Image 1 (spheres, helix red, strand yellow):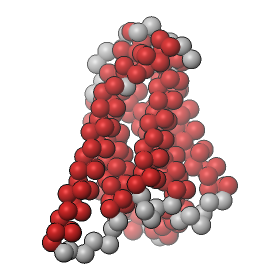
Image 2 (cartoon, rainbow, N blue to C red):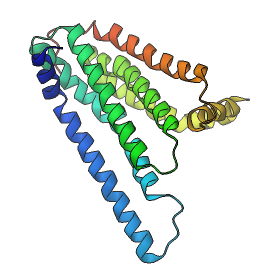
Image 3 (cartoon, rainbow, N blue to C red):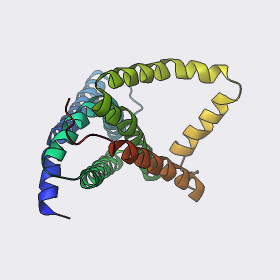
Amino acid sequence: MSRNNIKAICQLKKTGEIWNLFLLALAILIGVVLEFIFSSTGMEDDTPYGDLIAGILAYGYVIMNVFIKVFLQADEVPRGLCFGMTRKVLFGYSRIADFLEIAVFAIIVSLVSVSIATSTIFKIAIIVFGLIMWIEGIAGNGMLRYGKIVYWIYYICFLLIMIGGPRLIGEVTGASDVTALLVDMIINPFYNQLPVWIGMIAFAVAGLVVNWITFRKIPVNVSM
C-alpha cells in the first residue's frame, strides 16, 4: 500500500470519522443519562446499560450511513480523483476504509453489549456493509453522475419502503413468515450454519460489485 494513498484516504475520510466519533460520544451520553434517570427515579429498566449503548450505536450508524454519508461520498470522490488517484485505487482504499470502520464499530458493540451474541453482531455488520455498498453503488454514484435529483429519488423511495414495507409484508400471504425467518437467522445464534453466512457474504459481495460497476463510470472531472 502506498503511504501517499493512505494519507489521502485518511484525509478524505476525516469528516466521516468525525461524525462517527460524535455518534459514539452521543450514544455513551444518552446511555449514561438514561441509566442515571432509571437509577435515580427507581424506574425499572430491563435493558442492560451496555445493550442500550450498543443499540444506539448500531441504529445511529445505519441511519447516518443511509442518509448523511451518501452526501459525504459526493465530496470524497472528486477530491480523491483530484489527488491523482485512479478510480481503481480510490475505490479499493475507500472500501477497505469502510470495512475497517464497520469492523471497529462491531468490535465496540460486542465489547459493550451484555446479552447480544458476538455472531449476531458480526452478521449485522456484514449486512450493513452490503447495504452500504448497494446504497453507494446506486444512490451515491448515481448522484455523482446525474446530480442531487438521484438522492431525492432514493430518499423518497427509502421512506416509502420504510413506511409501506411493513404493511405490504402484512398483506402478502406468507411474507410475514419469511421476514420473521430472515430476522431470526440474523439475531438467533442457532442459525450459524455455513449457508447462512455464505448468503450474507454473497449479499455484501454483490453490493461491492454493483458499487464498482457504477463507480467506474463516474467522470474524472465530476463535481457537485
